[in-house]
Every structure is written in structure tokens, then in C-alpha cells.
Length: 317
Image (tube, rainbow, N blue to C red):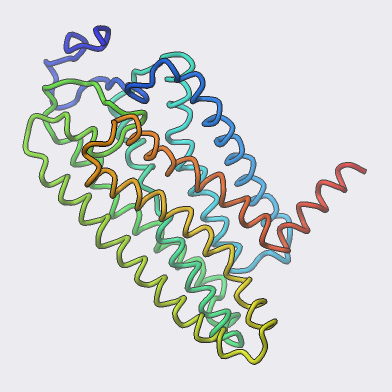
């Protein structure tokens, strides 16, 4: 890759390099155009699906409930997550536009580490109260309480993720400005520094381990109580109907945590796996959940499905 050699790097300003070069999917450059087709389709579905969820919840008064407020937060997070990475990826694939401003790279790094995990905890709490304490649901999860929960999720994300770009900005960059990735992945960026980056490495590992670990713990505890309440119901139909109200949430959790877990394990232990496979799997985190979440909720949630069908048929008439 002679066009992206060290000669393109500004060594006179090591504290704040002007630009980075994203290589896209290293080893599959010849297939970038073909790879862009499913990426573009998935991104388009994610945009249409999540904006549709937001529109339906906003225009349907019957959906102004805690479950759907949290769903809107999830939709917004999906839009931010995918939009912070996919447009730049597609510009690399289509136009070979590999250059990204240093500040833009750090901004992208901040937004891709979203607050999605915290939203799933809030949604699990909503399902716990709705199933285990149904008579207290409207009293417990009032609009002010839902707003406070949403605000706490946002603030938690800001406080925990802000050190990522702040620390990355402090390091001295004097090796290369070439990132062997399709987006500004945190570790891929800080590894370009020529100073000790153990603080960044340990901090990102701690956030991944403790924060996501705690979120998974709280979700598991909520669903343990939910399952106990469901199995105590007298009839099979009642159990299936009640469990069905959790189906969308469980599917969304799986689409988020499975790619994340698989990518993390591959990053830690898959040293013999080709780099392009690492990058492709990492990209699934930005593609699969934002695309599947609105489909899951649209297919499994009767209120959203009915409203969507009404909008389609009404527009057709």
C-alpha cells in the first residue's frame, strides 16, 4: 500500500495528527464493491425500520407506555450506532475515500460505544414490573420515573465512554496514521501511539467486563423472577401469552450480545484468524442489531404490527 505510507503522516504534530487512513477490510480490497451491497441494504433497512418505529410510537397514543419509550431509546441508539460508521465504510468501498479527520475519528469512536446495554437493563426492569407486579406497573413506572431512567442511561453512557476519546487524544502518535480497519475502533487507534497505552487498554477492558457484566447480571436476575412468575400461572395458555410479551426483548438482547461476545472472544483468542474475518465480524455489531431490532419488534409486537398495517393500507386507499 505505497499510497498510504509513512510519508503521508505529519510527524511534526504527534499530539494531534491531522488525519487517519482507514483501510476498509484489509485483504478483501478487490471485493469492496461487492461487500458494500449487503452493507448498504442492511443500513437502509436499519434506517427505515428504526425511523418507522419512532414514527409509529409518536403518532399512536396507545403506545405511549414505558415499554415503547424504551424502544424509542433503542431505536435512536441504533440509528446513532449505524450512522456513525456505515456512511464512512460505504465511502471507502465505493469511492476509496479512506481519509478521516483526527477529531472526526475520535467522535466516531465515542458514538460507536453506545448505551444499548443499559437500555436493555431498563427494558428488562419494565418487563419485570409488568409481569411480577402488574397492579403496580402504572404506579411504579410513571412518565417522570421513565424519564429519570432514560436520563440515567444516557448519563452513564456519557461518563463511561467519554474517557475513550479523551485518553486517545492525549497519546503521542509517531508511528503511522494507517488504521487497518473499516472504522475508528478504539484499540486499533490507540495501538498507533508510540507511548504506553495500558491505561486505555485496561480501561476499555474494565468497561467491557464490569459494566456489560453487571448489565447481563441484572437482566438475568430480572428474567429469573419473570420466569418464576410465569411458571406459577395456572394454565399453559396464560404462561405462553405472558412469556410472549418478553419475546421481542429477549430476541433483541440476543442480537446485541451474541455478535458482541463472539467478536470479543475472537479478538482475544483468535490470533490465527485472518484479519479480514476479524473486521467482518466486528462490523456485524453495527449492522445486525440496528437492522433486526425494528423487524423483531414489528413482527412480534401486535400494537406496532397493527399500526404499521393500518398505515400501509390507509396510504394505499
